[in-house]
Image (cartoon, rainbow, N blue to C red):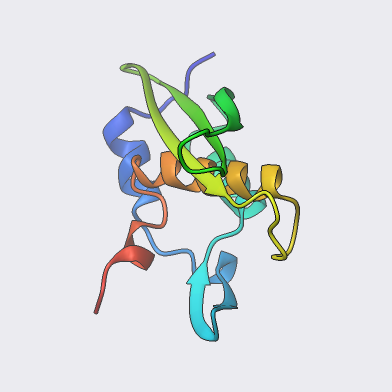
Length: 127
């Protein structure tokens, strides 16, 4: 099933600000703002009418970085076609951050793939 919206319409909706979905956090003592993975899903359900797929393309420990790496693909089924973007995530296997290393890498990869559709891109911009 495809969304009733074109990919351009969906990307314009995803480019909007979602302050009610943002969360503050400190990393290395520095405050940041981010949109948690579960909020990105809620946003996608609204903006793309739930007409998208998500899959893990690749995962495992890298012999080069000695970290856990994951690649995911998000596919949007718009009224004018099917479009996908991929994102990568990486996490140290001995992380002491919130969550386990696989969940953290997946969350990062999902948010990066969705940023390529414009979701939350304003957070990454300075000023």
